[in-house]
Amino acid sequence: MRKLLLTGFTPFGGESINPSWEAVKRIENIDGFALQKAEIPVEWDSAFKVLTESWEQYNPDCILMVGQAGSSDSVRIERIAINLCSPIKDNRGKYHLDDPKETKIDENGPDAIFSSFDYEKISEALKRENVKARYSFSAGTYLCNFLLYSVLNRIYQGKMSTRAGFIHVPYASEQNKTDSPSMSLEEITKAVKTAAKNII
Ligand code: PCA
Image (cartoon, rainbow, N blue to C red; front, side, top):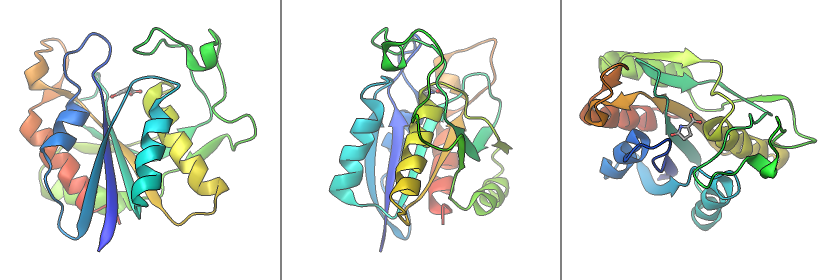
């Protein structure tokens, strides 16, 4: 059986929940996969370390990371990660590398790396489940892009066969964001489960 590592993030930006982790938490099993989960802190210096610990311990065939994209009205299938971090403070009030300027994730790494999951299969499966979803060609320049780039770069540098990708989910309606689009946690959980099932 294939092994899947599924991750979501802790709350950030003053929120009390992060729908990405709430959805991951609710998923108990995925047909065809042995499932492992990790909650990733919204902290530049520990996010990738926490994911790597689970990676090394568990040696997954696939990694699906999930994050919240508050402004989005649909599930975003992230196709690419870039080697750049904006000077945005994390949950500890810190910048990437403590530098209040734009920084690279890996000084010697490629400018961008494509996700390696089966994005077409995921997109079609989400359509079948009537989940509003689209491709996205920018995961931003904050922790989500940082985590996706770090994972894809480790696979690339290590010539590993692990398949990895990222989906962004909207706010959960339970977060009561009256002026932003949202989806119910139930719908978001269905979306994450469907994406995970079709990752490969
Ligand atoms: N979303 C943020 C970081 C954590 C999360 O859930 C992002 O899009 O970068």
